[in-house]
Image (cartoon, rainbow, N blue to C red; front, side, top):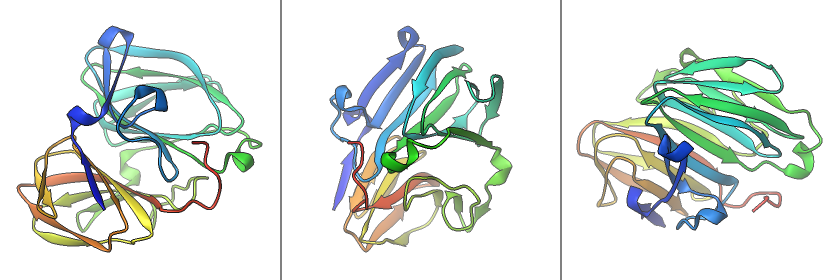
Length: 239
């Protein structure tokens, strides 16, 4: 099954009177978006800063929250390290909030990020001490048009089970082999391409399940951000 959600059909959010705006492929249930949490994916936002802007200190508990700096730079403060840490394009920040943490974020003007929340087995993670880690862009290498953040070949791990996160460059027609027991959640980051004869544009989102392969037709050099996650999670998720 292939489901396509254009940017216009995703949930919308904003902070600080529109200084930061978001489209959300997977919004909070209160956002009334077309996609509710599924698998062990709870939330996914693409955020752009129209001005230097700070999101004040706020709590997280249970979830694992990953921020990918797609463009520009951000700063992060949390109550574990008690200082501001700068992250630049290509860097990744992981918060394993577990028993609880407070943090604050600053986005520099014209920066863009993904913030994605994963749903571990909270019955286990809630009793553990929170952790914060950041990874520089040099930690992740392109190999055969693929850059893996989490999965085979990466030293980064999550509490959340069976997650792979990677980017793909599509610059020629290709067949992508899939595991029919997994979801593939795809965000189009640039240019156009066709998936099984469906034309996709930048910022479109695709949810794929129960497929063994898909046909990708190049319409230019296209970058895809992809998360694979289990069709059936072995524990009861928060949602």
